[in-house]
Image (cartoon, rainbow, N blue to C red; front, side, top):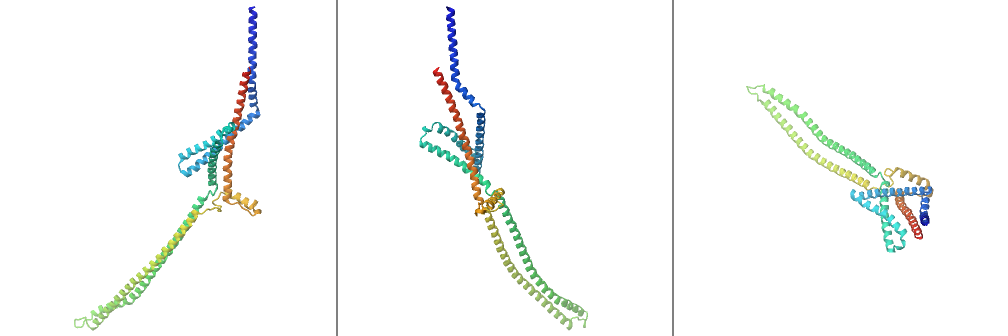
Length: 376
């Protein structure tokens, strides 16, 4: 009797244990089947592609971060401030896409219209800021990237031309000054030479005759009539020579005054020409500094120039149309910027959709297991 009881008890426990195992197996069968479905080759491939797409979004966000930081640094010239403000804004943009993507997918009915508008405005503002910075930086590097070098070369050319012209002006002025002074000195020397050649030989001859007459003594007196006549004539000749030399020096001084006045006029004219040349230099440099160089191939990107030449001379020539450098730059920069922001948004929003679908699957499996436990 005792053995029967023990046998019945053990049998009932075995049956109960078997039943519990069946219940457990039944409750976990959806989870196991779900896991088996998840580890299939196609799903593994899909997960790898989704991870790769998410990495692309992270890379695009990082590129956008670098571009925004470069733009903020060029504006503020503060590296630390630019880093942190862009880090906060870029993180806010990515987290806004992720967090509110979850909210709109899971609790869209609980979000009011006012909250929706605030969220949309916040997200749109962050994306617009990134788009603007990307557009600004791409345009900065694409629009006339060689303009500073071209301006520097053109300014250097103007400076060289200015120095060359100024050197020629100075050389001409110095030559004219030298010629004018040399002409004045030449006239004086020629006149003085004529005067000296006329008087000095005569004076020397008279002096010799006076000395000779001194040897002719008349009653122990050499100062006879001839001596006195020669001496008187010598004094007169020397006085005439001295007077004419004095007049000549006076004329030379007067001529020097006229020459100095003429040189002053020439110097004044030279200063006026110099000022005009300086004004020309400043105007040309100002034109260079403010010039757009929009159609100058030296300032533009060679690849962009080649593309525009191909488009304008090839495809659009039959339509009598052309695309300018600035138009191409704007369109290409906007395309790059919008594609970058769309890549960020699409990558992270697809990650939200994928992850939220996984959560839905997990919640479904957990609900199935709880229902199975309740039934057992």
